[in-house]
Amino acid sequence: MAGTFVALVTPVAVGGAALNIRFLRKSGISSADSAASVGVSQVFAFALHILLLIIFVAITGTTRQHSLAPSVWVFIALGALVAAALLLLAFPAGRRLVQSRVAPAISQVIPRLLDVAQQPAKLAQGIGGALLVTGGNILCLDASVRALGGSVSLASVAVVFLTGNAIASVVPTPGGLGAVEAALSAGLTAAGLAGTTAVSAVLLFRTLTFWLPVAAGWVALHYLQRRDVI
Picture 1: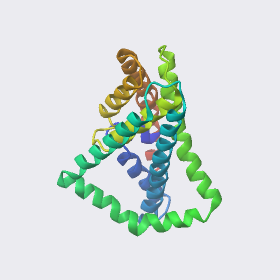
Picture 2: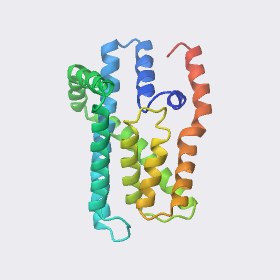
Picture 3: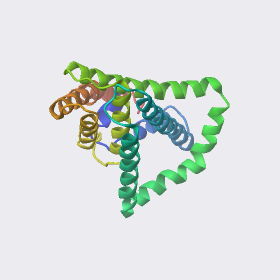
Picture 4: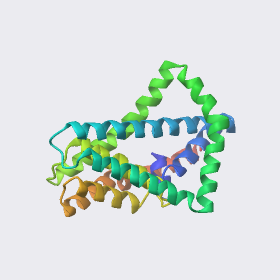
């Protein structure tokens, strides 16, 4: 919950990762192990994100009740991700950011990941947690669309969320503000939803998943600070 408040003032994933590392350090875990543990969780999330995107793109290709051909979705998803990656690498600061994340992954995250892979219970926890978070967000976006009278297949909504979230993750704005809304609205519109309905559904989704938890996150952050655990 504290992470939801931190996300309001930091780029996507950066603030949450820093908060988790600080919590682990305060719990007595070494700096290297703390960074490696948080890195492993991010690797799980990234890998499952890509896997789910591929699965749902395939599902839209086998379902007749959808408004986008899978080839179009593949073009949008891959093209947007490649463009975002090239944009990031086009600037020295972006290249330094990539290098700073790749180096620790090689030296710390990979050994920890291999260690977790040998523990089925821990592996299930990691995969299950990442799936729960992603699945909850997809269902919330789908519910927001339906609440406003829209009708888009769940598979298409999933592709929209996964693609939009991936694009927004490389945009250095607090909580992905602006980038998430634009990407999701464009995706839902491309999926056949009316423009006004798509924008309204995205704003409702962001209110539920981003803005409403902020107050509780502020309380949680101060509570944890008073207990000196972060």
